[in-house]
Image (cartoon, rainbow, N blue to C red; front, side, top):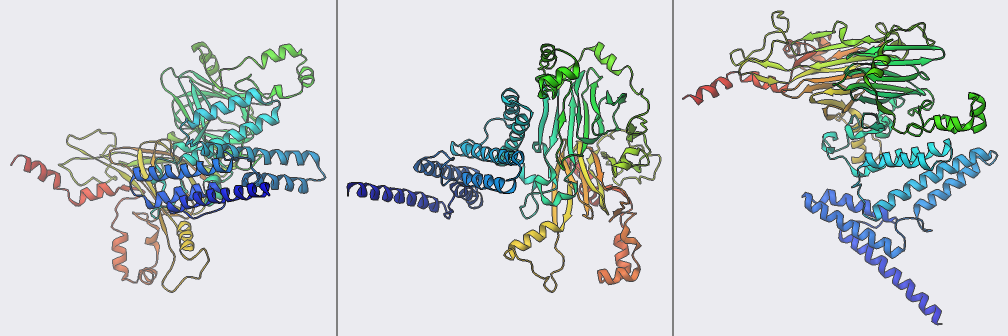
Length: 635
């Protein structure tokens, strides 16, 4: 009887405590989902929606965190491991599926269970951080590097090392996601949705980083949004080498196309019994085929060498691996992962000597070279014979090609497979756009036409001038997706997207598909991306887009255009406006206005491709205002 009474009191205590937690959450305006983590996330979302001031939101979120920790203490677990833990249940379900799907293959079953365990450990790690109130105060980049170093020290074999490093990468991405982006408003659409077509600098993670430089890789496009499925098998990386820095020899299971954005150097490619070394200058485009051993040196003693790299994996879609043969502990050479007897037989060398060779290097993937080593590595630049992958003519310099458009507002260069054969094989076009500053004198408020050959874009600043931002006129590409990496400057990209509007409409209508109502028509969503150096913008095919440079700044971008073959670029404003070609009757029927009025609007813009931006046009609307302001100062 006493035992039953104690059991009854214990159950009653649990019910009371649970009710207290539920009432505490409801006091914050939160419903009662079963999982504590779900309640915590819902509570935080309510804080963001209901509290206006930043301080009020922080106080509200602290109350959410306090309630969560209280519930975890009452449940007797720090956010992990109990029988009622959803993460544990998912882990058990995952193992059961592995046993069922691979019951006839023991090796496949073990690999499947290892993936289940890795996913479970990652989820537990994330929950422990939430439970103790950690909101990523530690630098995510530093934690990522530490994690990879721990993997190198603890892993027993190559498989464990790869799994551990993969967990580090996933943890880093999750930490970034939980941390949130302080510039999130730069990535939002006009309805507050996250912008799927913009990546800020925090969207990159360090693949290699030492005091002499780094290689940073952009997150997988598909992880950002399913709308980027068409380019899911491409990746972007930025290589930055300090003066006299040397990037260690490595190869990728991916094709790579480099663009030299800044500086000068030398790159060497090795395959089979052939070796090529090429000079690198600003504007150079160079392909490195999958499997080729690559190393490079920054020849300059003062300026950094910066390359932008498009990566096309050939093994696993959307994922690639870096393989270091020459190396040691850091970067980790893959040779020691072979069995000792295999290495001894392959190199015909004793085990102790092999251990010294493959265990010596600990300086990282980028090291500093002496001036003598720099000269030696650059000595045979541009020499080389028949390349195993086909004829090689060295890099192609994009900026030495005649621009497809040039005016006082800027220049555009493009290179395709007719200029550089590897681009044709990859169905790729590389372009470079530079929107320059335009200077307007008070004495000459109306800009001279860019057809005026006497005007030099390099003539310098006029006394009393006003800097204005130019823009690329609205256009769309018929087939290619443009990946634009901002090299210098600031501005914004405005893209019109129907997909986000369709999502928003389905939410408004309860998530169901409905036929268009009478008069509803197609809906579109404006997506604006505030771009600056090191950010990336995506422009999908068929989506009208415009790029605007900020006032007083050049905007320089390098673009990789995927699926470039048979692509057509249609400008929607300016002298080359494609709508001008519509028949007069088509214009009248489409706009429900006389064709004459439509044509007046279509013909009003006298420039093409790069035109005056909004700020310059606004100033031209009132050209005498600066003069009046000056006159008033002397009255």
